[in-house]
Length: 163
Image 1 (cartoon, rainbow, N blue to C red):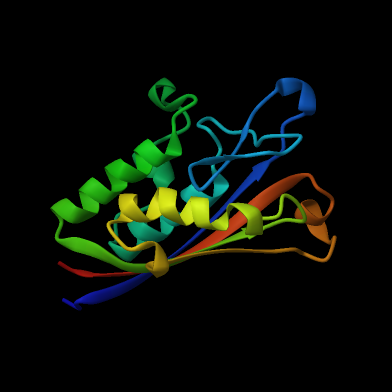
Image 2: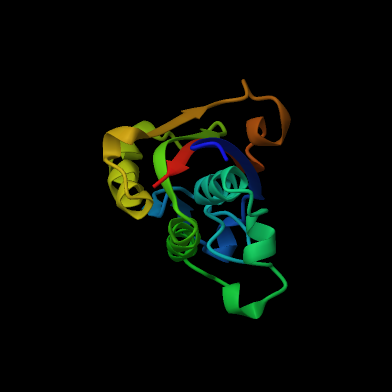
C-alpha cells in the first residue's frame, strides 16, 4: 500500500436571502457578508470540500456518507467539529495530513483579509502548521451561478501519508 495519497473535494452552497439572517462561515470562521449560505449544517463550503478531499484520499467515501443531511443530528452542525471527527477517523487508520490547498470560487466575499485567520483556525485541526495549509479564492469572471452571486463553490486538494 502506498505511503502517500492525494484527495480532491468539491462543494457548492447557494446563498440564503438576507432576511434569513444566516452568518457566512468559511474555513470555520465567520466572515462579514450580507448573506450566509444555505445548508443542513453551517454550510461551510470550504470545509466541506476539504473533508471530501480528506475522505477521498483515505478511500473513505464522502461527507454525505458520514454526515447525511437526512440526519437531524447534523442540523446546524459546526463543520469544524465534523472535520475533527474526520481527522480522528483518518488518524485511527494511520493517516496524517502533509498539506492542503483550499480554493473558494465566487465573486464575493474576498478571502484575502481573512486568509491568515482561516489558516490559523483550520491548520491545528489538520495537525499541520499554518504554512502547510493554503487558502485562496478565484472568481468565475461573473459567469455561472457563482458569477451571478447565487452561491459559492469550493475545491480542495490534500496530500496524506501513513503516520
